[in-house]
Image 1 (cartoon, rainbow, N blue to C red):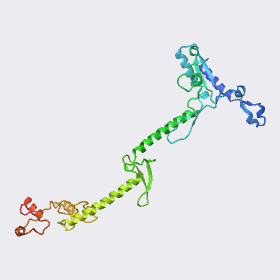
Image 2 (cartoon, helix red, strand yellow):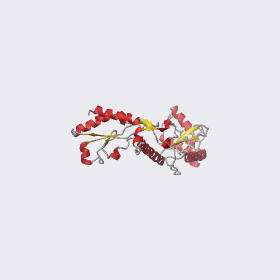
Image 3 (cartoon, rainbow, N blue to C red):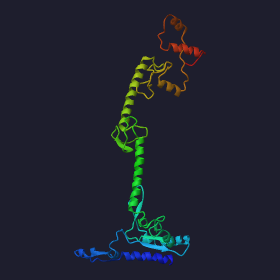
Image 4 (cartoon, helix red, strand yellow):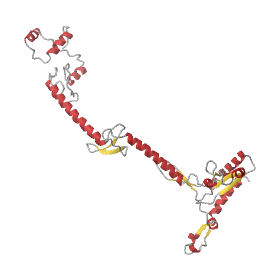
Length: 321
């Protein structure tokens, strides 16, 4: 028989299996006529327990192995509508996977006469249309890519997603308290009442520990600033503005640590000098009278040592002061 004629038989089988007749079982006498309609083949063979239509077996022979394989594949291709089943899917954001329903499909298994003679009908000789490889008869009749197979794939995907998610969450463990988050990001309210997103990072902290650390660092910065202000207030003033050597309190350039011993100007005056390109600050050299007085008693001049040092470093006449 030509492959097209064989394929047409499977389509005819499906139409035959769809035929329904009245079930005359006395136990169903009280039901509505429509409810008593059953597929004729189920009434004829009531012991059939498999879901879906009865399977059909195809045996080919009288040709070489390659020709027989091609013939089976050609029949399968031409009759796909009869045995392929109905594609179903559940809409998901992460994939478009689905499964096939075989309630109105004719299962077709195929083999060669040579394989049957060698292994028998219960051996691994059957190719189920729509599956790969050859199987025993029971295995071949299992519906390929059905709902159970789809559920297994979905479960595997969910397990993998959970594993990846858990690995990510484990990497976001708080370095202070050891808390492991359940979600990557949570919403928190900022100081001004607006809602802001808080995202944890690997090697970072949870929101409470982050807030505690920020508050602690802020307190430490304030304490450090107050200590610097106290220390700088006790030092000599700025040469240019005569204010604190640490700068104006609360200004952007205020020093947050104790000024060095060689500092002559506050940060603002030093910045202004650089902006106006005034050059290096050179203090006026001590006069002869100041030098003589310094031999008797320590000068009452907080810049005295720097003036003496500058006189040695910059002895040229007419130097810019």
